[in-house]
Image (cartoon, helix red, strand yellow):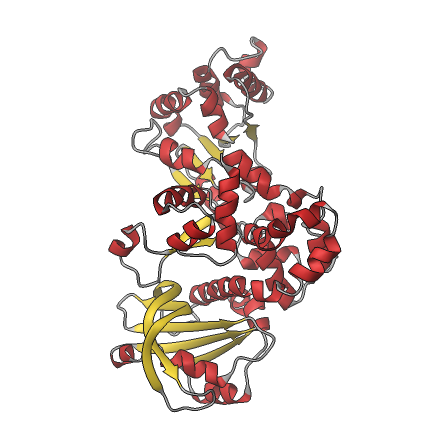
Length: 492
């Protein structure tokens, strides 16, 4: 059963039903489901789907020729192989598909270019000469993101400006990812997402009929299973110096977020060198550099500003629990590692992923028109702001400036409306005193801007908070079932 990817499929369908020729570049990191999405798109359509291999140019051309000629091209009566790539690509216009579009998908296109660097030029010349006006749709797909962004789509490349559509596929969001596990509880869906993220290949390794704990033990911590060697396999395929990258990713997974902290914890020492390695991980889609939601262009251009976080939840899980207990796992102590390392910390570990789920929930509310205003920017906020001093349970506010962080902040285009969100993934209700701490932040800004507060909680809200929310339209309480079910999506 194919799950999700409605936006990607709709994009491809719209291009397919356009009258003129289409040259589409679809790319993204490994395992995000590019190939399966393209195969789903091709269903019911006459097409040629060619998966490139790491082989010589001659072998590639032979395989491509065989695929095309098998479709009943007239040239198949006379030849068994095209003599060059120009003739092979030109033959796409002769595919015997009647009035329907000639659809050609080339998967892992960078492999083809690696074997013959002139292929982009050949395609460019043919596109300008005949393909752009033909009833043709060519999809170039690839996982080598750096090659596609810096070479294939760069200004100096022959195909620059020729693509009629460019789509970068990322991992699934929470609401598509949990469709793989419809019978899991709301809490287990959040925990599952915290462990695997939204990579379809990872999600497919888990059995939806097994409890989450059994899936983790059987399909992550057991030597020989697919996910056990996944991280090492991907790093070795994409990078050199894997030991160094292990240290970097491990430092981030265990809580280091600033460049100087990561450099120190990974024992690299030199921040300039660390920055280069981190940039490679960002390009692979494993790490992201994050700024406060109100950060300006100048701040984002500063190499020493911002924080680094792992975008891949599975990488974060692996380095937080499996990598540090690798010797025990190699010895087969799966139950011991789960019982003493994973189980006691899994709930706390999932708090960060829960914040991400809450941000996705707010995005869905915006799509449904269910927010008090339309925001222009949304993300995490961090910096110096007002905090409340005094004992819990008192309304009296003694304020001071301090470094703090806000889980979620959404800001209107004119900067006069703010949505401030706090996320609690804990085994106890969101307390009224915690809300007072949240409400105290940004006190000076309240003189010129409207503030709304959205509180997200795994374990509900205490009586004082529920009473306050009933009397204050600017305060909204969102419990776990509401967040996970996202009823606004069903009502759109």
